[in-house]
Amino acid sequence: MELPRSFEGADALPVDAVPPAVRAAALASRNSGEPVGGYLYDLAAAKERAESLVRALPSRVKVFYAVKANSFPPLLAALAEILHGFEVASVSEANLAIAATRKAATHSAAAAHGAAPHGAAPHGAAPHGAAPHGAAPHGAAAHGAAVVEAPPVGPSATGGRMVVSGPGKNSAMLAGLLALEHPLTINVESLLELHRLSRAAVATGRHAPGREVPVALRVNPERSPVRIDHAHGLTMGGLPSPFGIPEPEIPAAIRAVGSLPGVDFVGFHLHAVSGNMDADLHAEYVRGAVDWAVRTADEHGLHLRTIDVGGGLGIPFEPGPEFDITAFGAALEPPEGVELVLEPGRWMAGPIGWYATEVVDVKRAYGEAFVVVRGGINHFQLPTSWEIRHNFAVVPIDDWPVGLPRPVVERERVTVCGELCTPEDVLARDVTVERVRAGDLLIFPNAGAYGFEFAMPAFLGQPPAWRTALIRPRG
Ligand SMILES: Cc1ncc(COP(=O)(O)O)c(C=O)c1O
Image 1 (cartoon, rainbow, N blue to C red):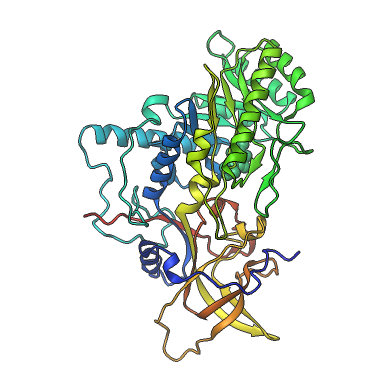
Image 2 (spheres, helix red, strand yellow):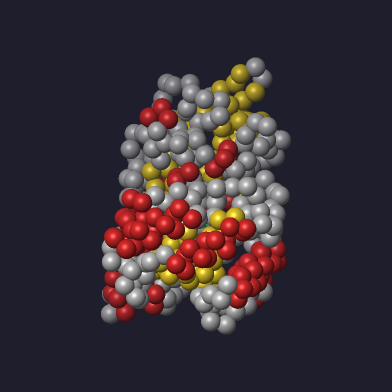
């Protein structure tokens, strides 16, 4: 199949599908001489989403944001004010999470003492689009909604905890994580990893009673609790995969964690689905994971303290209902004395980000129209990686240098390509646009998760995407 999937002539989004604040910020970024190519994030909207999720869940469910989805430091700091912690997969992500936790704690303390909670962002200022981190800490509510200041349940109540996942945790990484001296749980994914962790723990004096490293065993369940079969969903359990410990090997891992020094069993971790749009199905997955964890802990006489069910809450990339967090929360009943951890990435960050890119050329070849943009898979690889039909809106720009020919297509199917020398560099195929000209902007909503982080910036050495936060107009 050619990726991304064809739109088969479906229309591009109308321009008002992009909030005015986002359009204004994208326009304001046209000031560097380089074509526009970057991400705009609405941090106020991120906080609203985080709050709404925490509110929808029973109190024994803790929400740890998966940093891999979007590690933009101001976003992490905004989320750290609301959430209980972070899921990280490297020492560098852990450092970002710690910095965000500290920043949020300072911010919360300042707010408690009556300082302005949203920093010194100039009234109504637009972002400097070409600055890699050119952002005030708190953004405009692009949807015009008021931002509710949440009680700082994250940093002050929990110390910004972390869980660490990933199938290749080597000795250097484990030593680096322990050296951070930050509250973290390691989701161990193999027997060798457990031995490495024990050795690193002993080397850093963590074998003393009460100092052991909390460990959750990541399980690859034998039977997948839920199978996602739509294009951008992934099923990561019940299949041969490098993730986690296959269920039949869990008894051996339990014996090992009980006998090795420096490690302390706290529970189980499963991250077996991604992009699930069905809240009932997701609740069924979580209940299945909880039942399995409780049963297994009982069978082995273990004290179960945490069940981490990973991320996987989906967002609609094509018109359709949202994942129903209220129904999901209502269907969860964590067992007494056990903390249930969720690690959402995509749901949290996807809808609060937009990718904006300038049309560099419009051309025709043998009857087909191509729109060539500043970025492509070097900025935004998501549509190709996940087979997403990721729609966009055309924002018309009337400025055009006098004397240059300006190519245009009207009411026609186009394929949107990037500037890389590879036929894989395609963002959208066969989309009907009302009009698009060289110099116009394309804005892709729903680009806040796995956008910047998932791209391949080194290929061809074109300027990387910038990232910026929207600044909230006050008043
Ligand atoms: C261990 C783990 N937790 C959480 C997530 C976040 O998943 P999602 O973005 O689907 O919520 C991922 C994504 O790959 C993951 O690997």
